[in-house]
Amino acid sequence: MKKLLKPFFFTLLAGILAIPAFSQCETWVNKPNKDALEEAHVLYRQFVKTEEYDKAFEYWKTAYEGAPAADGQRSSHYKDGRSIYIHKFKNATDDAKKQEYADMVIKLFDEQVQCYPKEKELTLALKAYEMFYTLNSPYSENKKACEEAVAAGGKNTSYVVFQPYASIAVWQYQNKQMEAEEARRIYDKLNEIADHSIANNKEYSAYFQQAKDAMNATFAQIEDEIFDCAYFKGKLEPQYREHPDDTEVLKYIYNKLVSKGCPETDPLVQEMKGRYETIVAEENAAKLAAYYAENPGDHGIALFKEGKYTEALNKFEQGIQKEKAGANDSEKLANYYFYMASIEFRQLNRFSAAREDARIAARYKPNWGQPYMLIGDMYAQTSSSCGNDAFDASLAILAAIDKWSYAKSIDSSVSGDANSKISRYSGYYPDRGEAFMRKVNEGDTVTVPCWIGESVRVRVK
Image 1 (cartoon, rainbow, N blue to C red):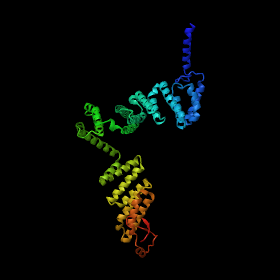
Image 2: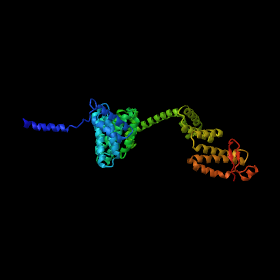
Image 3: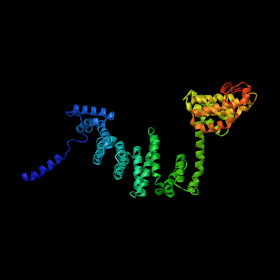
Image 4: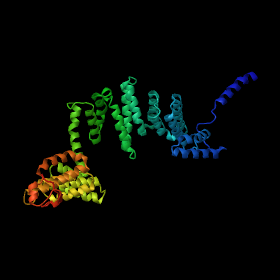
């Protein structure tokens, strides 16, 4: 009997010795040292919050080794442990140490998945993300992590997986480690997830859209090699036939076929093109009308560019009223007043009104030279009719040059235009002899006659 029991005893002993000192899902609940573990938890958490990871480490180690799963209600020992070890990884200079820390980060991810299965989807996604962006894990291992994250998350997989998975797929395909069929499968799966979440996850829809765009930009490096017109026709035509009156299906499929090089002579493309263009034109018109109803000032800019100045002026006035009653956006108000000033000056010859609106534009946008350039242009254009003679006209030119000079002094972007105008009009300074006859000396301050009415310092030629 003893001979029979002896092998069993050693087998049992080996099994006992193989049991780890603590379970990875063990909690501090009902532990005799519960208070000490909770204290260590509280202490390390304070240091983690301030990113003092070196100070946090020993307290975290005590809390983690005594109760890896904390109280069973929070996964912070795994999450915070990763933050600590990522810090160590980033600051390590020894390759062996870096690998040790990277392995620990991955271990903590895996333990969290086992001990907090409700957090599995996001935990696996973050694992794939950190392996790619932080740990520089081998692509073969990282790809497996991405696959696990997608398998666990399904249509609700986090967007943080998109770029790592796409980048690995593209690299492996380009380096002949992945077939085109698998690359297409990954592309289709990730886009399916993205489209589902963009449509259904209102809180993070924009993040999924951004991640989708970035991911597909990565896939664009190989899309000409792995996709063609025939592939997309075969995949999408059944969907179109099933929903021929669905506007969104029509737009998606038509754009996809065109983007993949299907020729306009293709029967399916021809069939869809007319309907698509009609729908898009109607939608765009409706969207633009709705936008202009909410943004009359921007409508004014569009009308201005179309040469519909009177209508534009009315919209700018509406836009100004709306802004002052609401957001009071200084940039928009400055632009609207400037456009009004331009119309009043160049189209309607309302010089005083134009100058006033240009001054208001300048107040809303300090250090903007364009309003002063415009006022200078007004003075120069009306100089020939200012006052009674050529001397009075030359004073108006001085006023114009003063405005151009001031414009370039506050706004270097107008310097070229300002210098050109100053050079061109400097030949029209007041005549020295005429100034003498009028008992006006160079450097005197005089008032420009006519509607300008500003004071200038006299310079003569």
